[in-house]
Length: 336
Image (cartoon, rainbow, N blue to C red; front, side, top):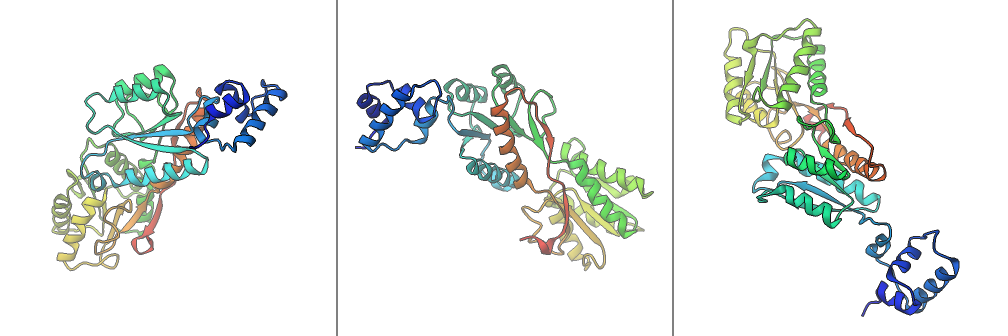
């Protein structure tokens, strides 16, 4: 049977708490007690585990990643997994573990977070923006519990968050198109109410206006972000009296439909038309013609979120509001 910290405490004639404090080099423990405990550790050939080392520190070296993992989530929200991998990788390098917690089926998600805090099962929590709500927010802030939200919440500025700058991504796309000195230009967007789509479109239009290339309303299509609507919008644009010389799709799914339309029309990119979209996954590497990509490295954002949650643990009063990871324009062929 493996030797436990309790066995060491009994052998040395001290409490379990004292053994844990010796393992953590507490300065309040006398040298005599340290020598006695260390002698017992050597005599019993005891190897401390991470829980024992954490006992006196009052921490777990564990971070909860709170999200929703409904059926098909990998297809509808592929970026979440890239972010998650980034968080895990950066935490592991700093000696932390990560526990994935799913609240997709939780009838009272607030209770899940309340239990995390009450049981001290983690030192902090990384929350995917899709599951944050005012109830969870109030609970976290009331308890001053270390946290980072992935995505900018639109209802409370007291939360700590990290996000990609979608406005800047739209601006990058526009600067690339503006250098081509072509017109007209069309933009296939998602819903007007969708924050990410709105920010990308706003950034794009602002820079195009700066270059004196105002986009007329008839060259902008708002959709529900299905590939079918991307296809219909592209077809409509290409049948206009003056078809666009460039089509920018706000997301991958719209780009799938657009690429199908361009293929049916016998158009190649970039020879016949400049074809651009945002993000690498899930479809840009497999569609033809291949688009120019505004790449947003969400894996890196996950790594930075991990660094920030550790900073928040070390300094609970720290407020973190951060946009991260500059977009990068890439030809699809360069993506691996």
